[in-house]
Every structure is written in C-alpha cells, then in structure tokens.
Amino acid sequence: MSHKKDSAALQALDRSHHLHPFTDLQNHAEQGGRIVNRAEHIYIYDTDGQRMLDGMSGLWCCNLGYSQPQIAEAVYRQLQELPYYNNFFKCANQPAVELARALVEVTPAQFNHVFFTNSGSEANDTNIRLVHRYFDLLGKPEKKLFISRKNAYHGSTIASSSLGGMDGMHKQTRGLDYVHHINQPHWFANGGELSPDEYGLQVAGELEAKIQQLGEDKVAAFIAEPVQGAGGVIIPPDSYWPEIQRICDAYDILLIADEVICGFGRTGKWFGSETYGIKPQLMTFAKAVTNGYMPLGGVMVGDQVAKVLLAGGGEFTHGLTYSGHPASCAAALATLDILRSTNIIEHAAEHIAPYFQGRLREFEQHPLVAQVRGQGMFAALELVADKSSRKRLAPDSAGAIYCRDRANKNGLMVRQTGDAMIMAPPLICNREEIDILIEKLAIALDETAVHYQIR
Image 1 (cartoon, rainbow, N blue to C red):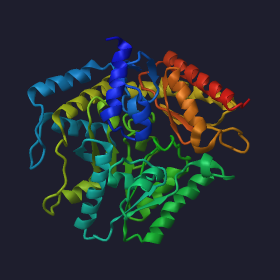
Image 2 (image 1 turned 120 degrees about the vertical axis):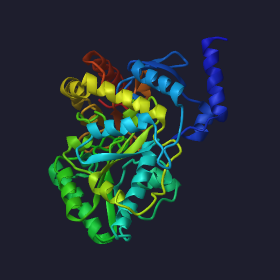
Image 3 (image 1 turned 135 degrees about the vertical axis):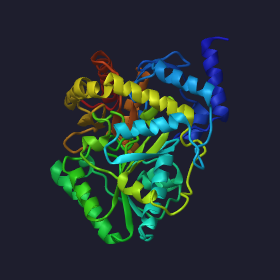
Image 4 (image 1 turned 45 degrees about the horizontal axis):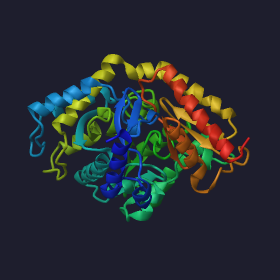
C-alpha cells in the first residue's frame, strides 16, 4: 500500500470513529483532518509527508521540542520497574516523592507542598476543593465564591470551564453558580482612549468592585493566568498585576496563578508569577512540566494554605486514580533536570526571546497588523482591515482563520484566536529557526492581504 493510501486509510478511520476535542464534529466527519505521525527537534510531520515548524510547541507544552531521549528513557525505565501504583491512603512511589521535592526547589519560596493531577483542568478542579477546604477549616464556610476573568482559559471540565471565561464553552454547558467574572486586561480590544497603564488600573479595579458587590465574607479566591494564553496571548499592562495583588491582600482573597501555559520558562522566568512579581497562594501547573511527553498536572500549595490543611480536620476527600503516576513523574524529573542543567530558560530569555520579539515587531509595518504583543517566547499579531478604525478583516474572525490556514499550508503550525495569530515556539529554537518562522508567517500575512485586497 502506498504512503498516500496509508494516509487516506488513517484519515477515513479517524473520521469514522474518533471524536476530537475542540472540533466541529460534523465538519471533521465530512472533511477529515491532519494526522501527525512523527516529530523531531521543532518539526512535526503528517502522514501526507508535510513537514511543519511547530510554532505552538505542541499545545504550549513541548518547550524542549521533540527530540529529548533523556525523557523517553526515564519513562521506559520507570515502566519496567513500577508501571503503576496509586498514591491514595498514604501510599507513594519514588518518582512522585522526588518530583515533589524538585518542584519545591524550582518554584517560588512560598511553595513547599504539591498535589498531583493528570492535567491543568483537574488541577484547577483541585484548586476549588483546596480553597473550600481551607476556609471550612478556618471556620469560614461561607467563603465559597470564585472570581475569574472573561476570555480566560482554565480547562474544559465542568468546574475548570466554569472558572474560565470562554463564551463558547459557557453557552454549551451549565457551569458552577459560585464563579463570577470580571473583564480581562485586553487593552487593544477594550482600552479605548485610555493609556495602557490607565486601563490596567481601571480593569484591575473591577476585582475590588466585584468583591464589594458579592461581599468580602463570601469571596474565597481570584484565579488568573499571568498572561492569558488560549485567550489570545493577552499581555497585561504594567499597572495591572500590582493592583490585583494589592486588592487580594487587602480583602483576604486567595490568589491563584494558573501557570499551565506560562510555567517552565515561557515568559522568560521559570514562572509567570515571577515575571510579574506576584505572590499567589496556589499555583496551577501542567503541560511543559513533562515537556508534553506524559500527562501530568498539579497544584503548588503555598504555606499559608498548607499549614491549615496539615493542622487537622480529618480526611481530604479528593484524589485521582493517576495522581502522581510514576511514569509521568519520571518524565517530569527528567524534564526538570534538562531545564536546570542546560540553563535553557535563561538562555532563551537572554538571547532568543528578544530576537523573536524584535523580528515580530517588524510586522507592525504590515498593512494587516494593528498590534504586536508578546512576552518571552510567546506572542500574538492582531489582524485588521484598517488600522485607524480597527475594522476587522471579516466577520467571525474569518480573516485570521484564513491566515492560519495559509501558514499551515506553507509549513508553519500557528493558531488563531479571535482575530489574532498566536504562537509559542519551543525555547530551544535558534535565531535561524526564528527567521524561518518569521518568513513563513510573512508569506501567510501577504497571502491574506492579497485575498482581502488590503494594501
């Protein structure tokens, strides 16, 4: 059977039986999609033979690319020794114990405990359980409300999607009634005539207003990504996070930093909390902790919360079958070892990220690009038909979708969110590879401009 027939057979099988996440299921059943069958370094290959530079690091997770035999070998060795055992009822395994300590060593000083999950979604579910348990043990059972942000992404379970602020998800599923939302710090979309710093203070002030509206005695926590990733790489104004921190401190509100995308080097430091100088009591992690090689997530639990949980109160009735899975923890230990021994985070922050952001700034002169925004090794280009009025290329973000499809066809994997092109290349890229990304992105932008007759 030929290579193309192999691909066609796989695509037919995929259409017949596989329901994909975040996919128009009818469209996929009719048209099919791409089947990725191998990867190396920063490139993925599909069954049709196309090679694509992966400008999204998988799904924001393969920060070290796809050629890390140390991680694969660690998983293989662990599967031979102990493929599985649970961590319930005071049991543990060596990789989970060692990983807990390793995570304490690389996270901010207030974190000395970790609760393991399989994903960021489950970790944010866990945050709800931890927060409610914490305030119950403090004798404040009425503190149950969470505040989050519109257009935030915190996962796709019922609980974590409730914490998130994605309209499409909320329209399809009834969420939790104790989660409330305020506006996101998206200056380009919502700032109007205000300066970025003026807008940052204004939108942060919505948190204080919401706490006062709901009642300080009822509000338990505020959850946010240091930089909103799936929402469009929304970079907060400099004034935003200091004011959020002040408000949380003033009102006895736990601050939860969702570092699922920002963590492990994406923003230029180990964690986005460090980049923006905030001190959360809980910190969600996943994705890049194993470089995407194995599923693993968790919550770093700050001393303020851990002290209460450890002081008594009986059983914490929460857990997951695969919490602290030995093979996943082995993958994470190997990943952390690479990050620490090679100083790749520091190298990317000093040498690659400034070059990446500088090359992207060249697109500010492109007729379609109204804003270039970025932090560290991720960024977004906001596309418009007219820069002065910010008129969009087409309804329903069709212009950015067209641009994404052109980039994909030309061998660059990037994503579209709203009217923005978003990207998060691996930290291990060199300058020549950043140049390739920029060149392919430029072709897609030019083809989009021709399609919409924008000069």
